[in-house]
Image (cartoon, rainbow, N blue to C red):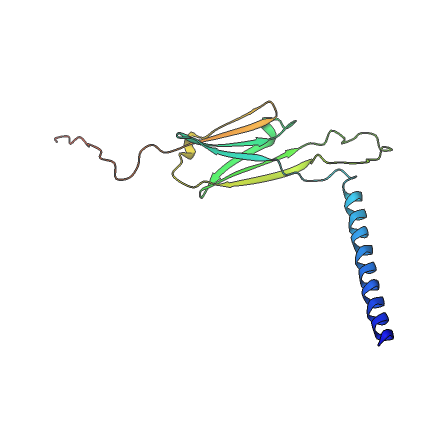
Length: 152
């Protein structure tokens, strides 16, 4: 019985050792990946609703307005663009120890819940932020509207 217990324990230890080895391999792979400049980024964003509009604010430091495109379609606000790497064409003999900032293409989508006037949407890049303002529609269905009648 003792031998069986030893065999079972030995098997569990081997399994645990294998699992720890896989974890270290994954950790090493992740560390290698973080030393390479990436080809994509995911800018942080905030979505804020006021009484008049929906505001979407994205962190886009170093991204000029001509590198951003904003589309409104089917109740979705889509922001796409590209953040250029400052290292492009840099020192070919340089190696990275750590890269946390993302560079490359990005796309963020925000579903618009409610009635918004997409035709009056504005966007501005300032201080490393993109601010998109989508005004709410103030006229609601069911509102009483007096329509003048002209005589012929």
